[in-house]
Image (cartoon, rainbow, N blue to C red; front, side, top):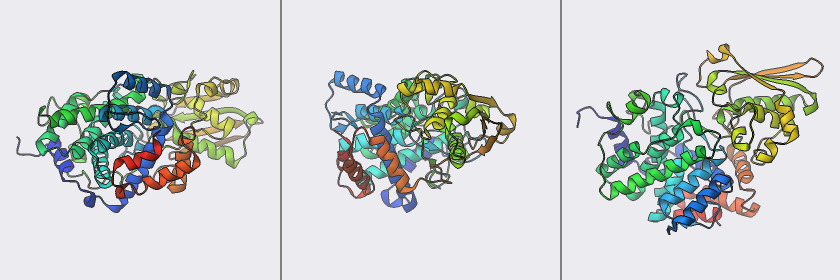
Length: 463
């Protein structure tokens, strides 16, 4: 072992050392908010086509277990439950997003932190009979490791085509599982190394079923890594570091000073925080969508008044949101044309708007023809730590409404609060839970750390 502490060592020692009492009160409050959001999107996504395929896959494996699949009556092994819940949690692209700290880190493109960590902690927590405090501690450990790795990672990792929710989410899952399984320091180190070789996921699959599979596979693979390490499986003891380590191989290196000495200091949930999605689509569109909606509401703009909608942005937004003429709801999640059109038509864009039927409807097809996007070098030059754009609505008669966008509801600047989170949860659960069940689920989540078992937490959201 080298005398200078490696990133791998730092991560392992942090996971070994974290306790429930060591987590600051403000971070624990945010963790509860993350669980509300995470279970909400798992409920919403449990009925998606990709989730139904995974449910059938689980049935065909005939794997018995005690870990529940949210929104269903399925109980299976921890790894398969994590796969299903991870896929569901990312199916609607409605899960939260890590914020960037500096202009050279791309806001919205670091990782979706909650789902891989939560899917793992829920599944393993049920398997081992963990209480609420142990569950919350493990969830926090996985979440924090994931975010600090994402922040330290060279942005080339994402720019060249890796999907970080997949490639980094596996570490969140592995460390949450390692904590709940009570792995030793050496076993935790091996789990991290195994997870590094299971890290995978490509952006080419955005707009397909495989994008949500990334989150599910990350959760599943992390648990497998931890279980193998517990059984004695070994890996390189410094798999994140050095010439052949994860950072160098997948992104050409990292800024080690963003992680060394900073795990839990401060917690990412405390600063800069994470962004809760107000819409079930790519987060890069959200500031533009909220600004556009504000203009519509403030000026009472009717659909028939809109002559043209123009949006200027940098390549950090235009390249990922690449579907100019989406043909289904998966493509629509990465289409500014659809996202702005549906707001112009309905003044809302919730789970009931992102369906194949709505995307293909004549009124949406016609409105999308009026949406024009263009590259703005001026906006791009301002940096990518915020999702900036210029939104313009040209009305019939010659009047133009315009406003710059850079933030949205759900960010630390515009938090949703408990009422906003409850509304999102209800929207996500409308097809699965009654109003009474929604209320019970929320009450249970907010007292998660006082529960005797993780099964109590999941009871209101399983069939």
